[in-house]
Image (cartoon, rainbow, N blue to C red; front, side):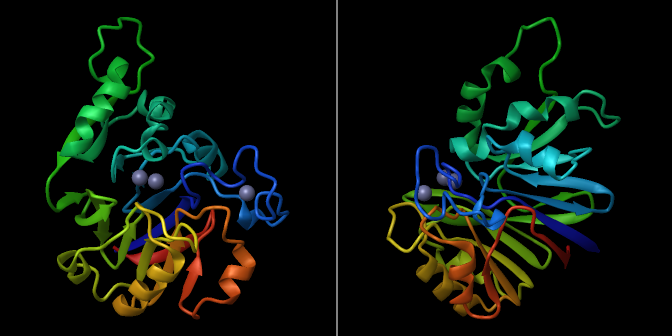
Length: 257
Ligand SMILES: [Zn+2]
Ligand SMILES: [Zn+2]
Ligand SMILES: [Zn+2]
């Protein structure tokens, strides 16, 4: 089945430009150097599925003219991946299918319920809350005729979820991909990998490490995401192998799901 993947955001947790920073990338006139927080949208079979809802979700949804969301899949519960949950409100009110299902790894559930307690444990009688239905992901699952397979990655010492869906995979935050997970990532058309910057970081992959992993996995096309302000878009891309690129906000790719 044909699918479209849209990069809603390609930036690291603080976004680029970073508040208060006057570096060359944060001051760059190139729109590809402006990166909102990391998330993607997958459209297929008339449905719209998001991976993560960032603090920039409202802006991303308006930019991409998102009219519906049929499900959200969460990778982990860091602020840059969940804080846009509340902005699902206007898309959740008048759905023929009821509440928007949220698929999340079990370890994120206490955090989601604590931060969004007013939604999940509400005795608020006046309406206006996001209508969402939290579901635990503990293995591959079917969504509107496509299979989503969690790919366990290490984000520092925390095992979190990346996902494979059809011929594409999205691994947003990781410092290490365990060998079993590498096996799940063979034969891909599109691969997204975390590539924060050049300098090592305890919970994120560097560009160099992700280029090495991409070389090993040999997807037809590899894109990097969760990018900090150390990597200028144009200059960095000019030095990458032909089948690898920094992603950018608004990038759209066709693939088979
Ligand atoms: Zn992140
Ligand atoms: Zn900067
Ligand atoms: Zn994270």
